[in-house]
Image 1: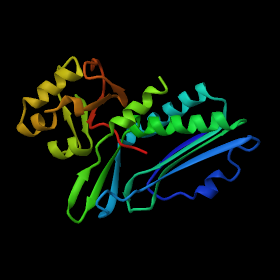
Image 2: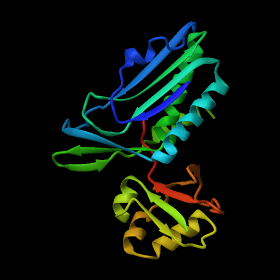
Image 3: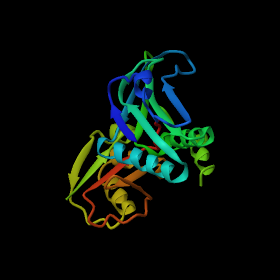
Length: 145
Length: 82
């Protein structure tokens, strides 16, 4: 079980080597910087609240562990300046069976999108703009309540 | 004295990332009223309270939450992680 918040990139293959050893199912999700609708994204700047971020992610992870039988769980989230197609974050879950691993991974994603203190800002040649939260992201949480 | 922190566009509108203030505000909402009365930049940052989230001592709370003996209150827009 681990939560990491870091500026540097991560290696997905290295992260899951030995992850959940003995589990029957491992699910991973990787978030990638997507270009904007205009296709002119230069950089995505990710700001966070250092004193709170890790605690918030650990709380989300702990909640997932009460709901599903997980033998291992990993959250890595980056901050700083990222370019299109670079990795932003990943989650990995390990369980005896795939359903627990899939559902827990979705739960982690849904909660860290709108309950972990990160904010994205798009930098383009035409100007900067903060990414708005989506109603759909908030609605996604209702599924778990 | 409490530390008040601002993030993302709340930080940009107010023009600083953190400050220490002396306040007798009982709740987060009281603190917002007090700050908004200071200067236009605060009033602008807090003009739409539906777009403001708050954490007291690094825990998300609602705007009517008490401040009590908290050391740190943080204001920010809805989070966009992932």
